[in-house]
Image (cartoon, rainbow, N blue to C red; front, side, top):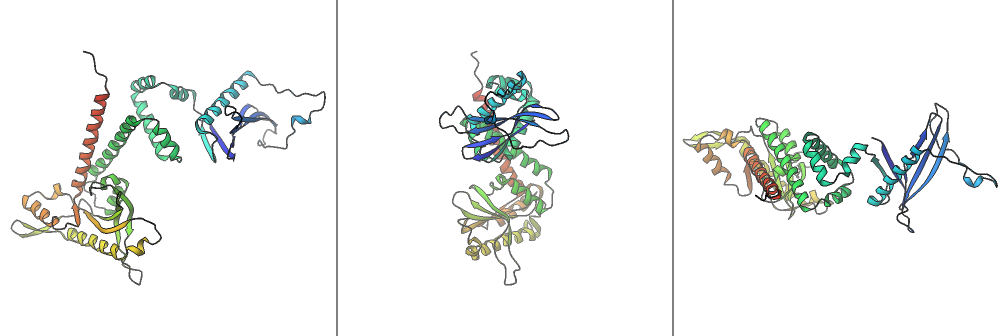
Length: 388
């Protein structure tokens, strides 16, 4: 697709790419448009200059000093003839520029646009009913188009312009879009869990849970914001050694209070050997993880003012919450005695949440079920009722 660029020349004007009306190896005629804020008539928003150039066959097009029509002498005149197809191209291109101005005003900075092909232009102009019929009849193409548009939207630089466009969709449409995106994200997270249940790399789980922060929100009952992964939380000595690095330093999205999350793996053992009949020790990995996150909490509280100096109101530390994500309860705790020992142990730490990976993703699955049920209910209510 052909690109069109604009470049600000002032706060109220922007130069556009040359509109090529005629071109050979040695001659070309272009129209050089200028988008302007016309204080006298806002409809008249395009200035422009015709530029007729000659060059050698192997030379590049360059601007040279020009002679204006004011050099004509008395009794002289200059004719610039445009062919019918050139007039049509100029008409179409100027129409697109006027449309751009009506929608965005004078573009600021350096901007780049794509000229749509005829088919895409026709698609963009379809009314909602015809567009719905087209996408229904071409479901594969429609799904691919939506996927690409969403990918483009996720990478767009001008977030404000995107938000403004989305606001035009209306509350109900935004709800449905939000549900669809939420369902897709949750399904991807569950697919990751189901396909990697035996993965033994802490780095793998730390990285993927960071990318799916909504999964971590299931740890606490309040909205979670990740401040940093692999966060330094103090503890270094005078030799700049022995610093404490938490897997996740998070904050309550409403109160700003900090919380720490330590990640192990689903393959990490929860229990050790049977200590007495029906009584099981917890594993060294579990007890060590609990002490580890409590040590990080203590370090964070001691070094809080040093850590946050110059960072503004990054987070507060009012008895920060702690959590350990570890093991696979369903896979390991087969016997009732094992489940009892595990539950008795983790219930003794009111300041530390111990949650297994399968419990965490079971919460995620529940959330997915709620969203899908909401989506189906909305679709059922939106479906027109038959008179009989």
